[in-house]
Each structure stands twice: as structure tokens, then as C-alpha cells.
Length: 388
View 1: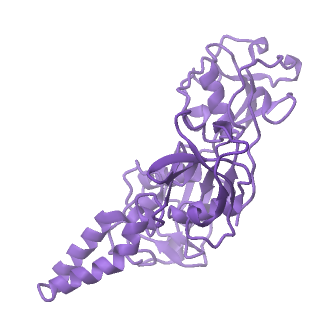
View 2: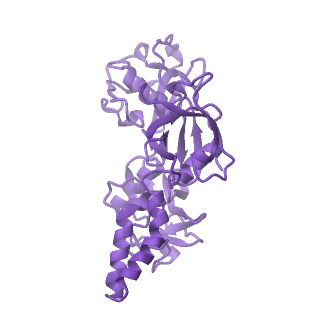
View 3: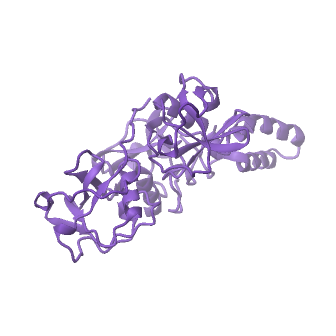
């Protein structure tokens, strides 16, 4: 699908929706004049009807609709299905990357990156039914309802087993030729081919969105033209114009994909701050132990002042380890802890995607010693089944 320059370049059916149908039809009628308006309206309605039906985050099946909830993007989250007019969850029994791929395709996202288990994106409410278990897709189905599956009986699953997915964004991005995963020449993937982005109109607001989509922190610099080398493939994007509030570049205004007046000497490069990393160490497994955070190239601990269950929820979710257990771990030996104490007075709401987004004192400021280091025990290790 080609869009008029200056309009959103989303080619995800899920995100086009009725508004795009109306805009396209009106623009075309205006450009073509009054001749055969009625016929042209019918023609455009037929052209865009499949996109319209596939939008609304749902299935083209009359029986099953699918949506994702509680994810950090519109292409990640806990899987929910609508069967016979009621929404419910999917049990992770037998859940794998083939099943995730059908969900990703059905909602108009890119390829499946992760089939998650053990309520990685939180548990559904107790009042919400679990409508599917033992899902088995071949990979060729059009929607999840066409996959083999069982009702939630004998024995039934509970919400600690809610399945989830992480899909690629409709317009995936990456950085190459840089020092890390957050700095380099910016490339976007379209029609299974990677291409570059032209510098025309590119500014810090565009970089902020790219950094966010990459999972990195705030931008350090923008418009680093040709610093990270020239690309060799297509130039997919030009005249990008983000507000800075978008979650992905696919939501920003830009010229139509592949339409540009640039050369690879104008390939954009960006620099973002690397994300803060967390880990649990000196425990019985990778989902239990002393909490450590990586900031400014150094590991450090977290003080337990004001630490509570909501803070632990964020850590377990960030590590893909299910939810926190209520019992306390024996305190790991402090003589193995790193010297630095990075965080104190942490106060999370519980829905943050990373510990760094919770309220806390300034990095490195505290009134603690290592006897107050936080330890966390999470319920499970999520199944990572790979990509297709």
C-alpha cells in the first residue's frame, strides 16, 4: 500500500482503520474532480475493505478476535481472545513461537520474537475466564481460532499461566555500525529488506522516538549524518516529522516509503543512552537473588528503604520471570556485593516497564549500607521459544 507523501506511512492493517479509508477516498475524489465520484467511492471502499476489517486489533474470524494487553508497545502483551462475545485469556500449556506468530500476524504486527509464559505481562483478573489451552498452530492459519486448541478443563489452568507474545513492530528498526545497540546508522525494515533513513527534516524529536522504539533511553544527539558509514540498500524514509510523543517511527508523518530525493551520504545516524540493566545474583536461580542494576558501566545494588511488592513486580516483569513471590529470601552475603549502591527510596506504581522509570532518589545518593541490599524472588522463568 502506498500512501500520499506527508501522511502516515503505516502499512499495518491493524493500524490503518476507518479514518485512513475516509481520508484516502476524499483526497482521491478531490484530485480527480467530480467525474464518477460515486463509482470511485465504491472502488476505494472495495480496495480498503480488507484493511478496515482487519483493523481494531482483532481477528478477521467471526468467532475469534485477539488483542494484547499490559505490554510496553502495541505489539507486545498478554494475549486475550474474544469468543462468543466474551474476552478471556490463553493458557501457556503448549504455547510456542508458531502460536505467537499467528497472533502477531492477526493483529498486524511483524514477526513473532517471543512466546511468553507464566504471566510475563501480568495475570488476568480472576473474573476473566481462560478460554483456550493446548493451542497448537501449524503456522499457516489466518487467525488463532483456526488453530487446534482445547477448552480450559481437565485440569484447568489458572492466571499464573497466562500466555503472551512480543512481536516486531510493523516497521522494525535497528542501528548498525555503532558502538552498541543504541547508537549507529538507523535502518528500517520494509518488505523484508533493510534500508536507511534520510536526514531531511530529522531532528531530536525524531531521534527521541527512534530511541524509544529501540528500547533505549533518551537521545544524546541527532542528525549524525554519515558518521556511522553509508548504507547500501534502499532509502526507505525521508522527511520524517515526529512530535516526540509517538512510540514508534511508524506513527510519525513522513514521505511515502521509498520516496526520497537523497543519497546515502545523507543516511541518518543516532546516539541514545543505553538502557539500565537489572539482574538477580547469588540466589538459587536467575529469577531469585540480590538485585543489582547496571548504570554508567558499573553494577550496583538497591537499598531496601520503602521497597515493597509493587517494586518487586516491576523487577520480575522486566526480567521475564513471572511475578514476585511473597516470601522473603535469605539475604545474600554482602561481601559479594558490588561496592556501589545505585538506588534508594524506590517507589514504583507497579505498571512500569523498567525499574529505571520508577520514582527514586538521584542515582548514587543513599543513606544505606550493604546489609540493606534488596533481594527479590520471582515465580518463574518465562519460556523463550525463539523467532521465525
